[in-house]
Length: 144
Image (cartoon, rainbow, N blue to C red):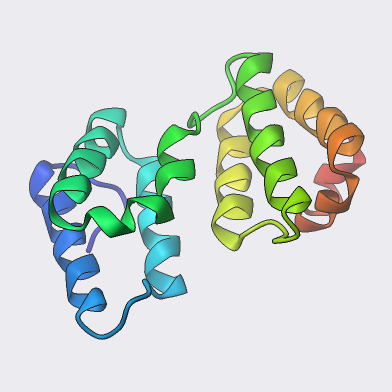
């Protein structure tokens, strides 16, 4: 299963792996969630959209695992993009769930794709909104 989807066939293979895992139990294992969320974050939008459509068709009960990743931007191009991430992080913290590993990994990937101004804005907003979440990021990065 590829990390970055480059064709609809690769997306289809991912859905087959998800369906095969569901044959062994009702939950998707953390390793698979991590890989699929990474694929969503790093692949072209058209493949993420195709994944969402096909998953709803073939494994509709699993779409909830991926809705956050499917709705988050792949880079921060505006303060609104940054605020979307901060809101999602705060919602998890407010629910007492803490930040899931897939979300921390997604934020770290988005950081690498975003400019320094947006990164600084993210950490300032996160410190104000959900300071307990700062522990999920490298000390050097959180110095902003």
